[in-house]
Length: 385
Image (cartoon, rainbow, N blue to C red; front, side, top):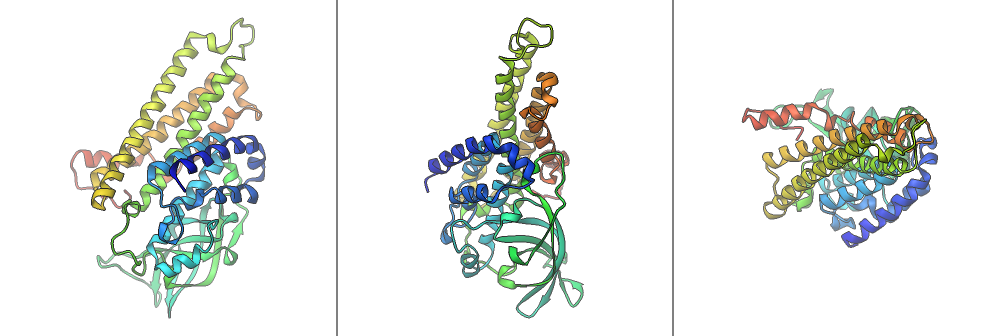
């Protein structure tokens, strides 16, 4: 599938999701048929290795897809980026196991990297138990990732540096119990509920990164660190929400008059200035974001590596984009006045959605502390970059 094809598909789906947004929010999950449409369009294949039928798309393309989808419905975009990001895990297991998992183009892999589970080493694999939060899109998934601390004979398994090892386990969705915990203020349609398993066997070939993959020299996409994929997706979704909020305010502004006023919001000089400032801020943040992505991609393509400096800039640009997007949405919400508070207003949904997205640890304000430390030239823990 050509890059332009996937962007065209994303634009089509975004328009459809825009009309379905109320239904998706009420359902508190992405309807199975909507998820299937995204799968058939190739959205979930964006991060899957080309060797097993994936698109292995450059990060800038994937981000544009998520950004476009978010203009229609943020929950759909969020699940799309989780599915696409989770697909990258298939590059870190043996090829035969990856091909078995990705047995058809519509396969959806979702999951959680946080190692809140326990994987006890046994002959040929692991016995896995645990509970995980934020399982976005998992009710429509074929396979579910579950981050685990590795144990052997009741003690933590250590890496070469003496640190406890954690890996994601790939579980068939049919062996996972999903819990109705997703009752939240925003991104309601993502279905990001808790899930759990108790003493489920997982072969070592489905423990992500535990055994060597077939690719001794990873292709450029997999030179990107895993945490970066997560952060980039959040940034793209937030920028899409902000763009949707600006579009909604412009539409409202030419129609609505304040009570007792003769002119519409659009004719108020203060609203004009606020809109222009928001537009400039979003465009600027977006340019920084994609500039950082393209520079990191160029390095990955030419050298097979993304330096700490480039990873630093990626996370700085992404967190900045999220914060700017949130401030833009806040301003559009305020400019909408009393109309914004009604459930019939899309502005209130954008407000709720983006303030759930900003809570993700990958784009937390503390990211700037790590970035600032690096900019000062200090010795810094970069494990989360």
